Amino acid sequence: MKQIPFPQNFPFPRRARALRRAALAAALAAASMAAASAPAIDVVPIPAGAFTYQAAGEFLDQGRPVDAPRVQGTVDAGRAIMRRQVSQAEYAQCVGAGACKPLDKGFRHLASPDLPAVGVSWADAMAYAAWLSRETGQSWRLPAYAEWVRAAADRYREEGALPSDPNDPAVRWLAEYDREISRSQGRIKPAQPFGHFGVNALGVSDMAGNVWEWTATCFASHSVGALPLAPRENCGVRILAGAHIAAMPDFIRDPRNGACSIGLPPANLGFRLIRDL
Image (tube, rainbow, N blue to C red; front, top):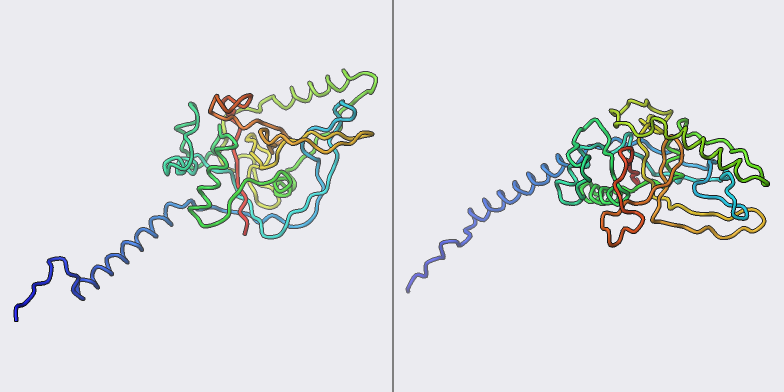
């Protein structure tokens, strides 16, 4: 009886076991490398419950601006916020992975682990959140403005009412101008190392420092008073949280789609994320 030779690459049992061991070792090594490359993120639980804060957006009474009212917000249990903002080095990891776009000139080569990523658009922050969620298997997202206020705790500050005269709109306009001048003094400075502005009562650092943080909340115009109307949302503009409330467009890079949002994000725009537990 003629003997049929086995092919050169026939997986004998011993060789098959060796191949399985090698494959397992490679899988373990890959998992270890992925775990090592995933950013180590320190978070702080956000206290659940109801609270009041000054609403975000524009409020008009018969077309004239008025002070934003105080509203009630609620944060559900099971949410935690980053103890600090996303760092330059962490954002650079996302860029290196091809999941985030490089920042614009002037911010592109910043890679310090001790400084916040700045010059970041809303779309950049969203891309980083999506990448981090994939890398960690956790749910990361930008906070709603109300969630940021709750996490800011004792560092949250409301701006007082502005003087106004129904017979002389210039009274409020001048007061708004003075407030804006006061806000802008020293606002855009180089980002400071983490912890420079201290920690709040919850242990969250640099809330209301010199970096404004993107939120998921859309800018909205509200008509109040004798003729209340449903708010008109503009999600091409988002609410920023920081030393005071602000609003900013997304800074879309594509001139064909950007319209009024074309431009470079300022050097005081960064972000931190919330993790849904």
